Length: 167
Image 1 (tube, rainbow, N blue to C red):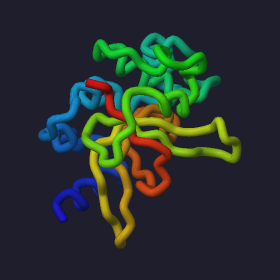
Image 2: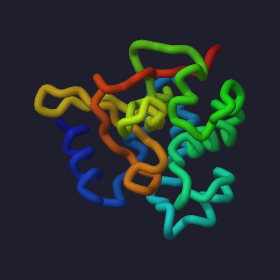
Image 3: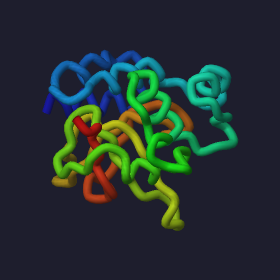
Image 4: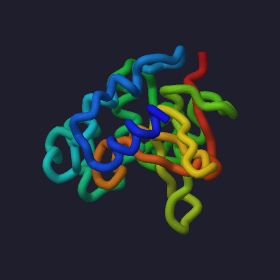
């Protein structure tokens, strides 16, 4: 109940929430989460220059969720999808990154479908599982979520793949 209350406050637009709640446990690479959290709230218009410097692309003209995940991985010292794909700016380029797992842990990368084309998608970092009205959602920290770096909920059952860095 406590997590639901905090999530409700956070998703209702409160920008002063203590994001420590999202990083206080777990054994799987919360490093990605801590790196990504530094950018929470940065939108593609007000922070265009900062995001462009981070990702090497114009966030206004290019869908940038995959570029954000790659930039965070690289900042963490890990090769992103550019190491295994000729199209690292596509969210689905992460479908072959790392290893597939069935149960997500904090810091895993989750790929979702988006749009009507098979190549389209969305990608971000798994933070937690939230159940609302009997429906399971993944709380994802990612870029280009409502044109900014943010936390958002995605239907767990719609995930195409959960990816974890190979050990």
